[in-house]
Amino acid sequence: MFRTATALALAATLALPTLAGAEETSDPNIIARQAQMNLMAYNLGVLGGMAQGRIPFDAAMASAAATSLHQIATIDHGRMWPEGSDNMSADDTRALPAIWDDMAGFEARYATLATASEAMAAAAGTDLATLQGAVRNLGGACGGCHQTYRQPE
Amino acid sequence: MKRLIGAALVLGAAGLAGFWVLTRPAALPDDTLAALHLAQGDAARGEQVFWTGGCASCHDAPGVESQAPDAARLVLAGGRAFATPFGTFHAPNISMAPQAGIGRWTLDQFATALLRGVSPRGAHYYPAFPYTTYAHATPQDVADLWAFWQTLPADATPSLPHEVRFPFSIRRGLGLWKLLNFTTDFATPPSTDPQVERGRDLVESWGHCGECHTPRDALGGLDRSHWLAGAPALTGTGRIPALPPEGWSAADIAAYLQSGFTPEFDVVGGEMADVVANLGHIAPEDRAAIAAYLIALRSSPNR
Image (cartoon, rainbow over all chains, first blue to last red; front, side, top):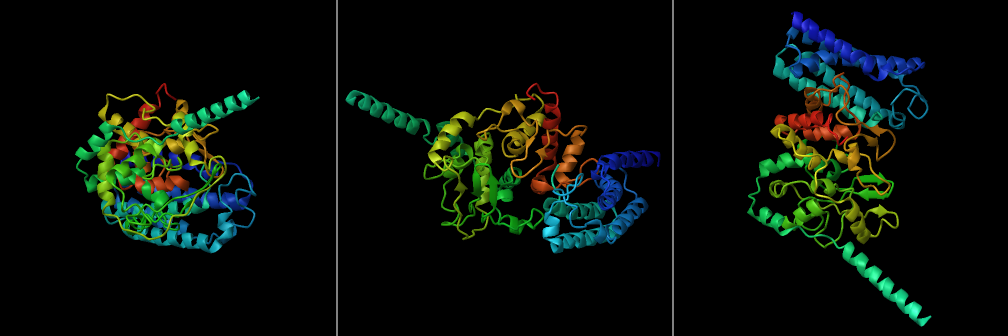
């Protein structure tokens, strides 16, 4: 238990300060959507950590993290993405104008994430192999959107 | 005056002849060809080479995503456009189609394209095709890859011509570029650690990591004195990071190459998402070898 707690604390410390949200911006919409991403990464840290064998598999903890991640992935994010908050128009964001050029495609990606996070929540408590498959699928949903709609660093 | 014109003509002719000789497309050396003919191509090993080399990322059809099923990614129909400062390159059809693709090629022609950047008709390829890096691969790997190629589908989509600005549009001129930039020497010295050595092979040949992570000079040649030290992105804005990323362990790198998760559980995007989708197919030991090489590179004097 102590080892798990240490690993979790480590994962949490690692996850928080270095993501996109660490950059400074005063736009509440950008702050909000980066906070959403950070909260997903916070929970993915548990699931991915288990999938990679860095944290021992714990069904209850995995389920809690996956359920939480699914809830965060399915909030109404519409107001967070107003016109003019792309990386050409605003500072401290890597959101590409492609999002607003193709809002339907962007929303379809968000729906793909919801499907993957729902499957993750259903799979997390089963066993490690099932969790690993769901994590891979979830990572694909994240990456699919980042590839098209986020500026690489 | 007559004598001057004569001298100018002679000099001009000598210059042209010199250009012609210097820019001649190279053939493969005899020992490479001999090794190629001795090698028994193994399609299963060739598939590993295929995913390490990332062939599908450039040569699959436009619109096929890196997360798409292998069946779609293995149709090497070409057609993706790559905008660069030198012009726009269109990835050709390299499927097994006899006319539109490379189905009629011989193993020697396939190897000459990969290891020397020379087409079966003796023309230089543009280095958008990373043959300057693939040149470090072994004949066995090429034979394996060709064996795998025989299992790939044919697609009849015709290749599009490149739209390259003058003077880069003169392919023969690439011979001069190759004189400056083509070398089969490795960028880093060999290692006594077999895992690091394997990683060196993977990174410096098929993996072609240096094509994006090493800076280029004004003519687009790799600046090997800053090997994997990070570079401005070739397409669009932004910077490609130095390798290995600061603070990452070998385990972090191997996990990232498999899953796309950074140590902070951010998820890879951009062109690197393609690379991760490809490297997810290779053996875990190979991802670990790449990581070991990069960690060893951290303290290399060649940085």
